[in-house]
Image 1 (cartoon, rainbow, N blue to C red):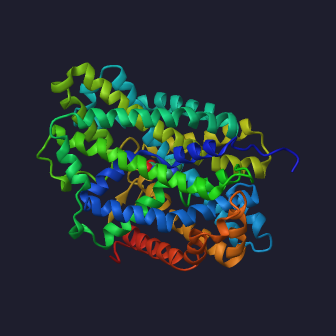
Image 2: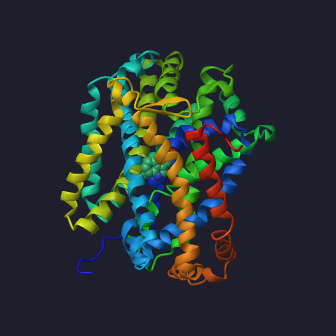
Image 3: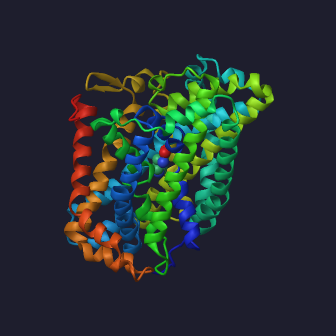
Length: 472
Ligand code: TRP
């Protein structure tokens, strides 16, 4: 290799960057609401078990693969299986998936930026109008917000790993933690906040069924950035001297802790404003919670803390969500960036220009599929439902391909790279790893029940989404 590969400067730099990737909109709103609707503490326990016993091994496999190959996912699968072209498809999928996920996440991030802008400029009352979101998504203002978000992301990405991604994460992640804690303290001081905490934490095992279990696993898997090629890419920027195993565990812990803490903000806020809320009626969709429901909560706060106070709370909330979204977007765009630099031998700047153009065009197509352009809005239909371009990208890449990518990495480790290959890699920087219980557990699980479970999730999702038939 002629040029030294850019690397994270330290373990903490990697942990913050990877946690920045993992902590997203889903942690702040999707997770707390899902927990509350699906058995509170019972859901939390199941979720934590999935993180520890299913997600962490897959996470270590991705990071190990990337560090071994020192390449993007595309190059990693190729480098470790030069004579077996079948695996190259897994590499290709691990680059296309993040690119497409970036498109739908970009749309949501641009909206958040728009809402942040309007909260700062004193338009909170406008945001809370039930009709507003429908108008907002079909307004030309989108283009201005899109330009702003694109500039922010590229300013971070052009700096590379150490001077861009790591530097941004070291500043943004602590800011995120602080804002989250401040909001939790504020929300918990409101009357009736305890009701929300109760719904969130008290376990109700009668709510747990097959689909809740499937949902908890899917949420844990997505939340930790698995199956997106991100941890393969970040692993390739990880020093050989550093300890992948401890770092991976800390990333999982941070992501889960943020999701858990966010529940102490989201739920109490909902119940403080309306103590009679029936949790079952809360929307499953983070999008409708963030853009339709939350502005109404903030406006209702006006009675308690005045319009300025309410706007300030809304601003902190949207800023927090925006930071969570930006750090995820940066990580996911780094995957195709690394692959293009590697394969096309473009400079980083040229790569970002080419990719930025492609992402912008696709983002505009996805963003105009909410009524603005009918052909994109009623793009296709399956399982008896009309689907927009945005829906298709979400269903295919976010919901369906992620577990498939996770399955492929397990199969790759088991059938091709061999468990010993992974174990040797994980022992670098952590010489004692081989003798730990975790090593034993990873060795067994990654070639038996983890791929089996991921295969069942994948098949069930395909059937549910595209055929309209659910296994459980
Ligand atoms: N945790 C993220 C969320 O809750 C999901 C996610 C992980 C993600 N990595 C990502 C989303 C990268 C976009 C890009 O939203």
